Image: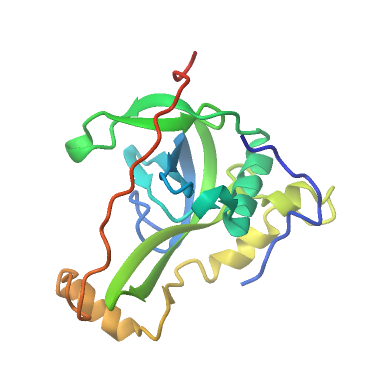
Length: 225
């Protein structure tokens, strides 16, 4: 269960557009949250994935928003991000429940664990592509890096500013850099572009990354009940 922290000191903005698929760096408006999907591994680590709809296309944004590390240790960055979302949507997240979503192969129904709160809400998202090296292989992530209210583009910090910061201030600044791509571990844009052009070969850097699939706990409560 996650409850909002509405302390102005806890919710701050940090300085620092795409097509219907949310797979390229950019800011995407009019995104409908269909479900917030909670994935917990046997080691206690957990992420929240976003099943969303944008311009008629349903899609899942997987895995980068980690709320717990191994042993259920709090992941500070992930929990701050989820707190921003709760402030923007004006909800707390209760206990996740069991549901079926069309996220399997060829959109087959799959058993997942979701939060009932936040479903069918409109939001604006900033997506950032990140490339890194793991086990000598190039890794590609599509990450949610900012939430904005869909109507006035306010961030959580702006919502809590009591009018001291105009809604949409951060959004307007972010627009200039929305297509930024992050390259880590010494990777260059040219190396990543060559890897993409070659159709993302697995053994490019001398070994594939671990693909061990964690086992997830079964939920207890049924969706909508």
